Image 1 (cartoon, one colour):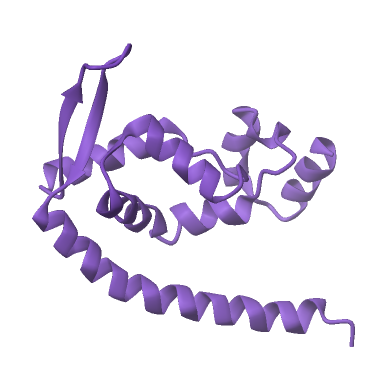
Image 2: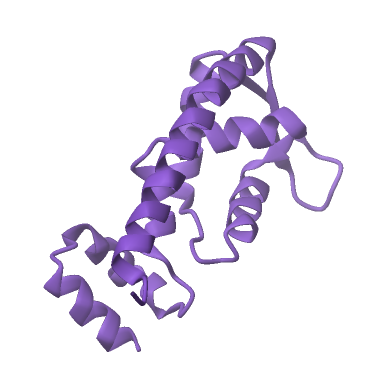
Length: 149
């Protein structure tokens, strides 16, 4: 299966997939490049992380696991994507963090600030429209390309 996927990627010239293949992520039969693109290319990832933090406080690895669970492990975000994003949020005043040393291993817990909540609400209004537009477009393409008639 991996050979077929790699061949297909070469045929459609998705060079940016090389990174994922090299990291071994293509060995996951559930890996879905569309999910990766949706979160990373569209800018949905920062919004979704703010969404998660609007619900409760998280530590970094918990955000990664929650994201992976949300997309049925079709994509497992790399810490090299999540932690720089959290760092940018912290620098922007959208989140604050503190160490939780109560457990066996210390965890850095992130909390959404009032400024972060305001930013999340602004992004929510934009993303709500953009996701609906994208969904409609995908449904139209699906109907045109994959209909039996």
